[in-house]
Image (tube, rainbow, N blue to C red; front, side, top):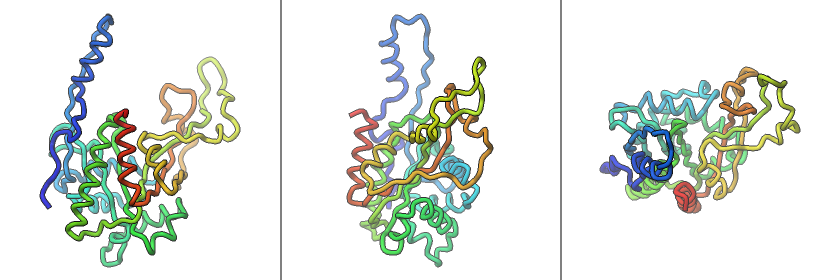
Length: 289
């Protein structure tokens, strides 16, 4: 298959200069001048020659403290072994590290003994334990595991093009008889809950708000699209990581707020016939429609 991605935004994502102009118009009476950074985002196929270390960094961020349980080098190699499926987002050309990525892996194909990919078997066992609904589906269904992550300061507008291109790439792959006839998609992501801080404020002891098991640990999403995808899923799960962390870890992740932040894993299972509608839902939500 030929390379398909444009090096420029396929959905005309407004750049920072346009947003800056609007901000200048809105704040024309302000006494302070704002410096705007003009950034052009570029979409590429995964590049085996340059993306290995960048993908490992993003995978480590995606799997959080449990990243140490998996062979991330092998997982990055698997992603790079299918360079015409999935996307990376960069800002300084193809030879730089990705700031975001999205791909899909066939759990059945990669865990087959002849493929010799222990990391997929480890990941499948891990996810089945975190989401027991998955286990009975694995022997009879084709599950596509969607892995996606981005740096925290990346605008969410980069997400719809990645999902749109993934849909197109899967269709092209199917035309060439490649093993991507999925019955379900399993989206692995992260969420968090807010928990009582262990640190006292400067003027008062730790707040007693949000007792009752931290207000039942309301779930918040690092990626806003996950809340949309969940609406189209047949099921979802929020799970604790296996790796223990220090008592003050949640406080180390808070920023200018009273409560600590406790990251967790998040899974959404979507039937293949609902996936295109889910992508359209993400596009509408993130594009403000």
